[in-house]
Length: 80
Image 1 (cartoon, rainbow, N blue to C red):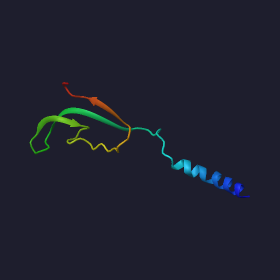
Image 2 (image 1 turned 180 degrees about the horizontal axis):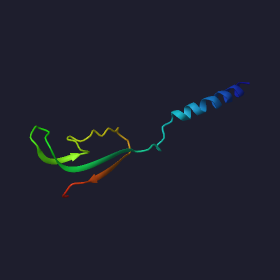
Image 3 (image 1 turned 90 degrees about the vertical axis):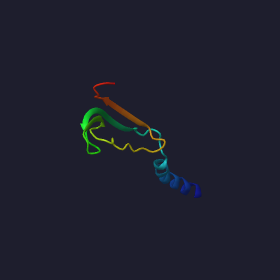
Image 4 (image 1 turned 90 degrees about the horizontal axis):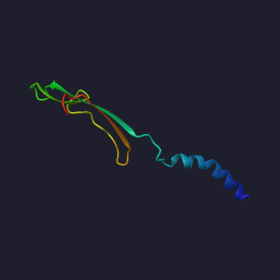
């Protein structure tokens, strides 16, 4: 009798327990950056400078220790 009750409990709890187990098959966080050389005035005086995604400073890249990341860079600079 007890063994049948334990089996029923395990059969119900197994999917819940397995759903809580983290997997390493998650998708990586992706970032896409475009570097350009443009006129911009971050301090009020216009000058040519590197912009990242059209802004200075560039965008915040948020990640957590252990995350897999994928960064795609488009270099639209007139020089390397």
